[in-house]
Amino acid sequence: MDHRISGIDTAEHYTWGGVCDGWHLLKDPTLSVIQERVPPGASETSHFHSQARQFFYVLSGTATMEFEHEAVTFAAGQGLHVPPGTRHRFANRSDADVVFLVISSPTTAGDRTNLPDAAAPSHPEAK
Image 1: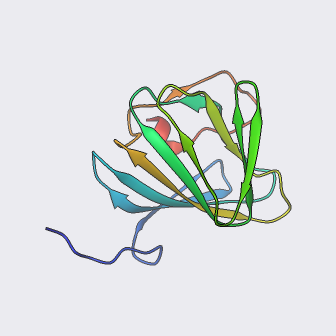
Image 2 (image 1 turned 120 degrees about the horizontal axis):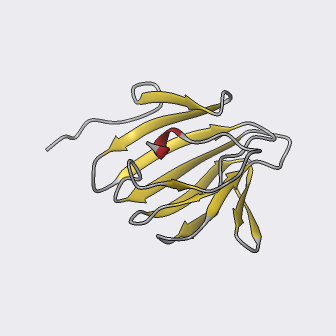
């Protein structure tokens, strides 16, 4: 069993959308924990996951999750569940960085369908 401590200083880092950062704190086929930083005005492409259930928990800043017919804004200390099959898009409509955890079970790798959305960059988990 692996009992190593994980943090952004030691975790695998990636960038997406040219301006957003992510760190794989736990990268397992059954459970993924990623810390991300999204600067003001940035967002991802609308998409859904067929299998993965996700929970987004904001560490700092204010996030907006856009769904098919509504948008939900949540701030530091608050989280939001996104069930499998739910069309969604994470966005930062504020004037400060949003730092958050996204916890997915199982991992979203290979389980992402992007939807038409020319305005926002894709996320690397689209692969």
